[in-house]
Length: 234
Picture (cartoon, helix red, strand yellow):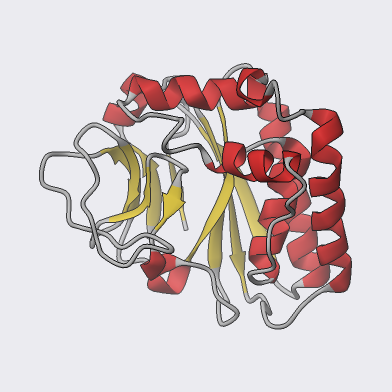
């Protein structure tokens, strides 16, 4: 199993950074009071750090709005995962508890102001590609949606052999590969575009890896993919 940034994606976003943490052997069951407190603290800090009025102009949000426009998506209708989290937190709504790994990457996303997401490795079919959707992509049922729909041609997607596992780059993930309490092995992704620096992506990955080792009883291997290193064995 391999994750690859395909040439058609890099032609659109040659300066993209895709941080990857491959986590294995985790115990994702139950709740974690300390992690829940970390998530709440991160969310509570957002109104002072960002502010609802100027959210779309914040550099860590504006860069994704521009990226979405570049591949034909409307950021107002389909906000990036980090904008969605920040918008809710700016209004006083902390992310709901889903499971421990989701709580962790949501906390890191809010702390670092970077998009973060994860997929269950056991549910992935074959290699994963970060690419641009073609004209005949398979329909995919996204989290919280009742019916499957195909990605639109030209949008950035993560895709395995069965189809998209995340649409509009980091907008919304497929139900098929979602993280659950039963997840043992996963891929966690943290993404960046200029002005976001590599060091910011690496720091977020380090935080995820430390928590996985300290609190989840698992292992974590991290790497950052870019135009110079386009693939990673999972």
